[in-house]
Picture 1 (spheres, rainbow, N blue to C red):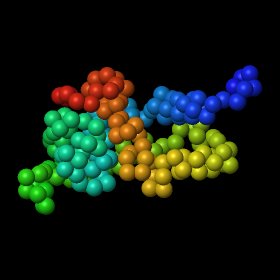
Picture 2 (cartoon, rainbow, N blue to C red; picture 1 turned 45 degrees about the horizontal axis):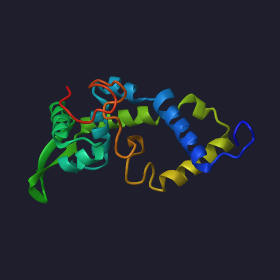
Picture 3 (cartoon, one colour; picture 1 turned 180 degrees about the vertical axis):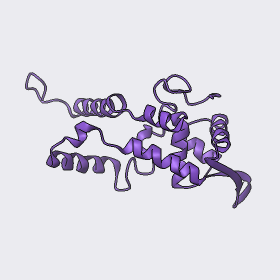
Picture 4 (cartoon, rainbow, N blue to C red; picture 1 turned 30 degrees about the vertical axis):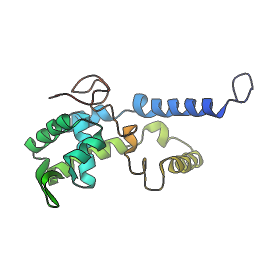
Length: 181
């Protein structure tokens, strides 16, 4: 219903709900900067670690998952290798490709990032248990039984995370390619 009592079109309501969800997660309770500070790296690097914690990946697969171009993905992986967080090896099934695997130190960093990102904000914790259960049921319906976004990561808006976060260590929001430090 609108303020005048007229039923709201479902598309308009869906758009409003989506805006409010984005505001809650990305504006009011954005934890990306905390992750960057805790790990001393850009968010896209932390995202790469979280992705590689699930399973090793080729550079091509990692670039697709991060929504970054191949040269920038190489920069990311080179930095993570220098930090001892991942190793790059010859792919066992195709010697022409390289596969990136997380190290123990990288897995610890990915777990720290995940714990920061997974901490529910106080307003969510304060919800009535019945409302929280309803919200959980609705979100499970939207994200599927396999968790956030099904095969894609929920924090990635179609595979994208604004790469480095809002004004993150490597530049303005939306930057997904280039040679960041």
